[in-house]
Length: 363
Picture 1 (cartoon, rainbow, N blue to C red):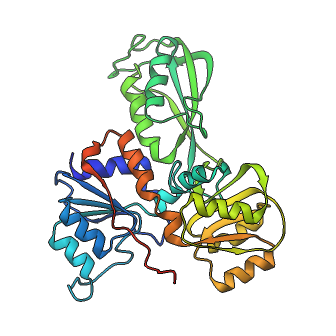
Picture 2 (picture 1 turned 120 degrees about the vertical axis):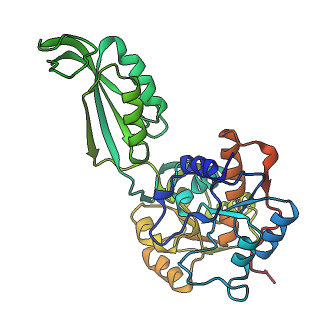
């Protein structure tokens, strides 16, 4: 497997075009044609993680947080020591940041599962477009074409797959000179019993679905329609959901601390509501306070809440559980490891970093 093949697999897990405008997920430094010998998974790229990569002879690191966020005009050992070592040691470096935060089955979903939160919707929906795709197929070929487009990821709505609506009718056409019709004769109008297959396709899959249809459709010029829908995807920044039973706020906060193995938590308590409806955003979620306030949640779990954001939460009447950034996102390694295994990446080339650590000390 080459670096470019791995990159394609990562794009299937969490498409890079989903990332926020400020982000720099994807390639940080790479030889796309280099063979992947061993992969180190880490939350950050630190000196300890780099030393671990060299010691364990890994030639590729996948980090959650990009080492490069903005363009550089020069790289020096003095000003960019970590990046300089990545380049000189020829360690390929990839990042999966906000694209992995937004993706279905990404970091927020993983953390929610750990905490027993059943997802209802994202806090802020993804900007990815959704399309209605319809194709007209001779009745006897409908199943074959359906299976091909489903295999290309058409028909996914939430946790349902292979969704479609099929309508029977008559299709007409008249082949002209220069055509090679599958059915009918040149110059003669033909009527064929056809099935119209309608389904939905995410923006990321549209091109492959169209190609899969063309590869299996018997017609020389298949007729198909594509419409952009107003429907929003079921994934995005953060999640809104529910836990099974109402719990007193202090008790639930301590349960969250234990399940996330957090060193400390800070509770911004605005009311005494019992906890049932919960919002979650791993990492720094202070910018989502306004969206959360419209969700009628009992508790918002996130990290990096500043003093003034805490005051604003009180004004909005929100209960907020502030957890250190590191402790909400350290599960990136385990979450991505499991997904890479499912994609067929051999376990023996995957290494979970043992050198990840918070930059803070609790005294």
